Length: 358
Image (cartoon, rainbow, N blue to C red; front, side):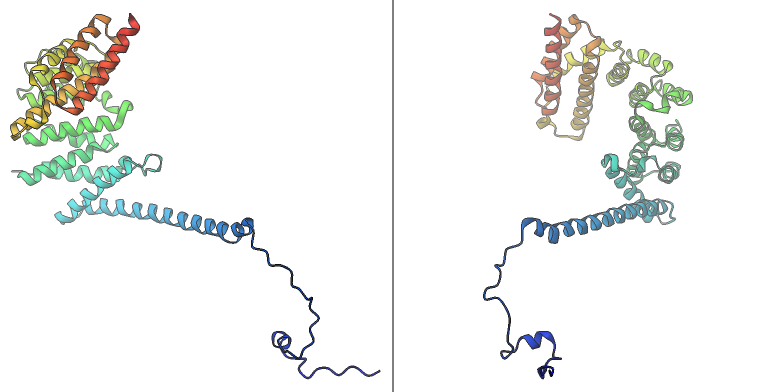
């Protein structure tokens, strides 16, 4: 039996071979129905790969951003040491902005405020600046800016010496003022574990400043002493409750209250009673002098309200009742929304406390 003759086109490609009309097809009469892909199949084909790709891109971007930030702060630190003054100040401004942004990142923070390299760069620039003679207005603004940047740092071993240098009596008046403010900010940045309270030389220097004739330095020193509750600091604050300047007395009372001491309550009574006559209204502020006075009074009142709120558990019922009436008077006399809000919160706290006691 001879083999069947093979078609002439048997070695043609299959696709072409099957496309010929002359080719006998052994196919079923009906093809199986085409079913749409299921949701699971779509997830497997599209969504899962997309998530994987997005995750890879996200991780890459995250590490790229971290690496970029690492490079940025190191470059800015180098810029601060540049011989070019424009480069130096551009670097200082960039570092200050990075410190602010980094402090708001929470657990994702790079802890830039604790970097000794940044602290040393900013402290070196501050020391160089305050050592110059005849500081003009522009340079004094730079002093103010740098003092606040130093206050955001958490490297006291680097920052405290340069701030103490800026507080010396031989320095420019504004340099001393901003150095005292920077020290207060630094103490706040360090928090409850601040090592500053164990620095007897720093406390001694602040006590000496609190004895100077300029009330500005006395009230700033009083505020700083309240953040450093060593026995010598608290003793000096008690003495400052009798100071002729009201802001010095108030800052001393606030400092004592911060350390749960009620010695300053008479100063708070005096302040609240006087504040009713001020009738603080931001809409009536017209001149720079009025603005300065308004700011000082608002600052004293807001801090006093917070101090009383902290001291409330240690205050007698009779004292609370007196304070309640005084703070109500402040709230009713002012047109300042912030002061009224803070006062109302204290009023409600005192009212609840009195109701509980009765």
